[in-house]
Amino acid sequence: MLKTRPTIRDHSAEANLFARRAFVGFVFVVILIGILFHNIYTLQIKEHQTYKTRSNENRIKVLPVAPNRGLIYDRNGVLLAENRPVYNLEVVPEQVEDLDAALAEVSQLIELTESQITEFKKEIRNKRRFKSQVLKGRLNEQEVAIMSVNQHKFPGFSIEARLSRYYPYGDTLTHALGYVSKLNKKELEELEAEGRATNYRATYDIGKLGIEKFYEQHLHGIVGSRRVEVNNRGRIIRTLSMETPTPGRDLVLTLDIGLQQIAQHALGDNRGAVVALDPKDGGILALYSNPSYDPNLFVHGISSKDYKALLNPDLPLINRTTQGRYAPASTVKPHLAILALEEEIVEEDTIIYDPGFFEIPGVDHRWRDWQAWGHAKGKVDVYTAIELSCDTYFYTTAYKLGITKISDFMSQFGFGELSGIDIYEETSAIMPTTQWKRERFKESWWPGDTISVGIGQGYWTATPVQIANALNILVNKGKNYQPHLVQVSKQGEIIERLYTEEKPPIELNNPYHWDIALTAMHNAVLEGTASTPFKGADYDPAGKTGTAQVVSIAQGEKYDAKKLKEKHRDNGIYVGFAPFSDPRIVVAVVVENQGGGSTVAAPIARQLMDYYFSAYPLPKEPES
Image (cartoon, rainbow, N blue to C red; front, top):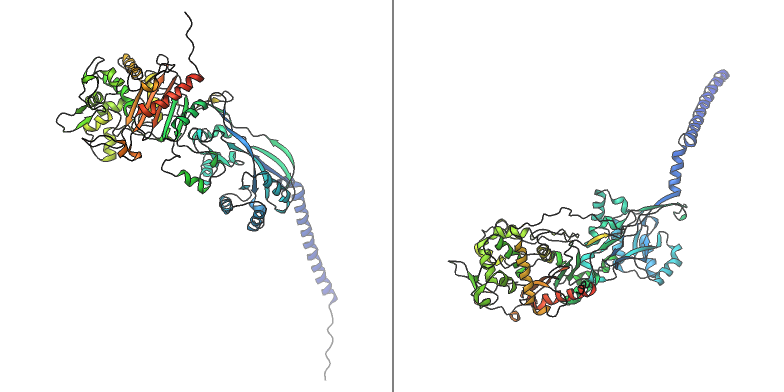
């Protein structure tokens, strides 16, 4: 068997290989050390400030601080909308590991309804999970104590004290003040589109209706901030600095809460509206719509049961003063009389025969006067026509004027247009024209349509605010003072209004025609249709009653309220002012389906004026 010769090792080659490998390993180590030192240099020196800032961001939080909402006062300084402290149980969802389990445990300690849990989960789906969300509001003392003792068991849950809106007069002012309620997704999107979302970082509520919504930017204020230091669990250790929020501006309204309460009391259970104005500047003294509702129900989120209760046939959610559309009826006869005088259809002493009805030549239809046998033994002039509310007189003049002249003239008094009142909930109602009817009904305007418009009925509708403002323009002989609710801010600043355009005054060819209409309205209270309700008044009133038919009565039939459903009965309207020589208050009252203006609406106006002149008595005449 042959033996193999042993392999001779090349120590020199091995040494060279080892040296090469050692060199490569050394270079690799040097490179790694270089990279390490480079990173250390970058972290500790070059990017030191950046990482220090990022570290502080983890340790220091900037929390928004909500501003206090501005308060609202009446003209005499009575507080109408205030902020009261409430305790809420709030949750930051991202800090809770098992939200469902935590909610179940909390519900064992305090009462949580299914609707509250459902609403909470719905809200957090629409918001960032790091933002605190109210689980249960308005905790009582016992609930606050229980949760405070057990709070350490529930990371992410906290008891927060916040100021919440409260309306001490409840349903008396709802349609004027409106209310605040929770911000919803649509409103947040609108705020973001307007670039105002950052100012609502700590805000849960926003104005929804009335003054609260119209003056939201004034009432809300400017958000502040608080820099705090937190531990690794996110718990606040201390406050480092504070930027105080700017509270919202307090508003002073033109409203008189006493007059508002009288309006509510006087309307009682009747559906209707009351508007009272200061004729000197258009400031609204009373603005009441009945039925009303308690706005405090909406502040913390209204229950389904309470909301359904408001969806009844009486429509309490509708602001009748600005959204109710009623035929103005005979309250516009003084305005139409001025137009007839201006157009020389009649003169001051013109007599129109009144047999108790009016007929268009060649038309077999009678437009009946409310008094079947006519007025003043058939001989009616402009004064008697207004004083006794003679329909035949205004049927005749309207027929001669035509709808175009009537519409153009009455539009100057604000009919068919927004009044400019500083709340958003308003309708323009209808001042009919030939074009309007053609677009609405695809029909021509007929002369018979004008006859009904001549007594403020037919297609013509108006809101109580429009009716009051039209009278105010008449009282001021053409000058148009924009109706408004806000007088100044509590700090004395004039508040900007949405509608700033001043409307030009109405110029008459003969200014004496103003005096004819106003004098006739004075006569209507002294010895005409409004005389009974104002007997014995300590002031000198003037006014005009109106009765608006809700349904048509066929030829040959008589109106009988007892045979009609309540919703088909007449509306009663009254407009008036006092004192006659130097007006200090203008009032418009509408009462739905309760009869004539002289029997139901004028007595309400009397109560308002009695209160007003007792609270603000007329100056005594100097003794001779």
